[in-house]
Image 1 (cartoon, rainbow, N blue to C red):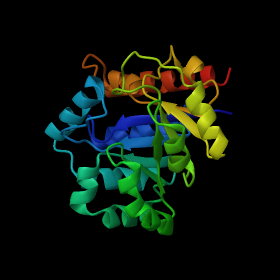
Image 2: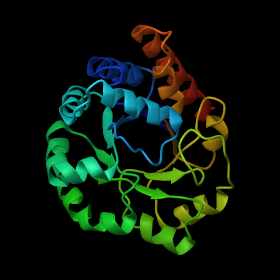
Image 3: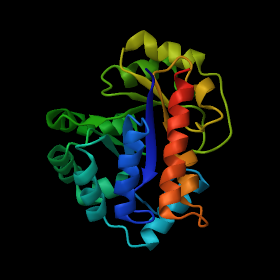
Image 4: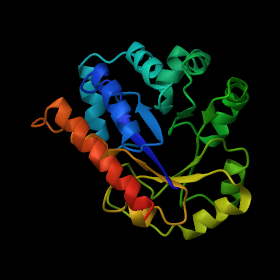
Length: 246
């Protein structure tokens, strides 16, 4: 069965909501949850996730909120931390890794940490049993793909196109998928631009999908109560999980 990874913005609209949503998504069939760490300059994200980041920061998000949420949900749903390198560097990668080990957080997704720079931390991640998720993109050469995926852990994040999350773009991914499959059996998940309408098509040839903007878009709807937001996001997750496995 193909996997569904859901991204949500931690602490928006508040940390208790994040916990409730995470547990509801587990019941809806989500296999892994990316807890997005709000950051002021999320360079890989489109306007939807960028807005949620800003609102969470304006509401007073702190790293302590991420830790509190993670401690509550990680024993119940496979949890990853998705964030930009600045907060990890500022507080210390070792600090976050120790907390991840304590809570059972299984991996980090850091989109602005290139593979070459990540190599300085990989041994420490391995020692803690925490995955540092690797990215591949259509712009990568076959030689670079081989280098990136050779020691990849947990899953490989395949960027569907060059650009930002949430955009309506498409590129031919067959050569990239073939290049990855040639060098590793690590599961390959596709992200960027995956929603209810595109999930079935994008899931072809890969092991799972990563969905973020489609969920966060509902988070931003001011005319919905928190309960309605959780219901709508969970219903959408259930629908996407069904579509990728038809």
